[in-house]
Image 1: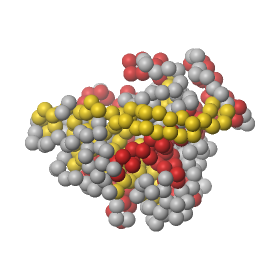
Image 2 (image 1 turned 90 degrees about the vertical axis):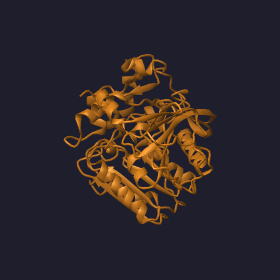
Image 3 (image 1 turned 30 degrees about the horizontal axis):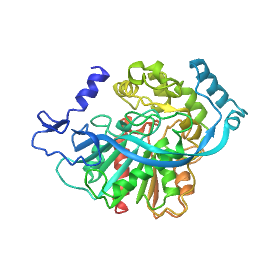
Image 4 (image 1 turned 30 degrees about the vertical axis):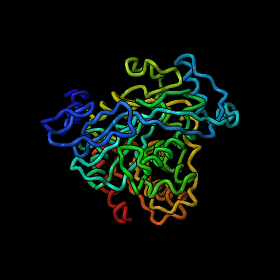
Length: 400
């Protein structure tokens, strides 16, 4: 079975479907409300536990971004040379391209998906799911058996996943000066507030839980620091305070200009948008053998998401202690995470435990979990369900 065939089958949750607003639903299931979405479609989640509305949502956001004295590379040789300068020991490249701060603001179109239980119940709690580098929103609903969306829905939550700015079906503005961590924190905060204020699907969610992966965890963590009342609880996956392996991670991805790597998917993007080079690069960055299905790796490579220079230059700069966040927080890592643990999240200490304690001094409840024999892309390993069960148990224990 090819990877594309696998994904096609994984998306079919029932044998019979009825027509709906721009999509298909299992027979006998009513379509959820599509308010707040433009060009909406309705479809089941990969495992069929949820009925989801997908489309575009408008977000007005502003932030103090870094002004970089750095131009979009002319070719792949320039891209490679840039990262050689960036990772070289003792290099002053990062400092040399910083030119102060500047305000960035605008109205952005964000590709998003709101999922509700297929049984027609209306949850009072929603999880805002923010993906990391190398993926898009479907990291959270990747395939049957690998869908965090399905698990969360079965636990009684709604989910709202979205393509980060510059990724997938979201707006793709300047990849150096605009698509950066600070602006993405503002967008995440605005989306969370919109969920709390009944802007999507006509549903008023009284509880909003932030869930992130990798760079998405850094964004989620920054929201808890800058806007401590936005989230009621936070789950950070693929995350720690250890940045020593980021150069190794960037090198392993062997980043290439996206429009050259996958011309059909990324033809409209300029040279400031990048992707990992190959399935081998993807395995280096996100997987740990033998704890994954090769078909999942192939599917992940086929559906990989883009990243910008602006994000790569600011990914380590947005997280800071959330001194006033009092809600429960847990960090969930693959025990063999490369970028945030250099392949061993237990050395020289439990890095997830150290991070949650340092970043959340006022939290009412803190915990951590290391999924054994698991790399950075936790959701794409055989151990994904065990990680999901830890998250579900942690939230329920703390009444969320």
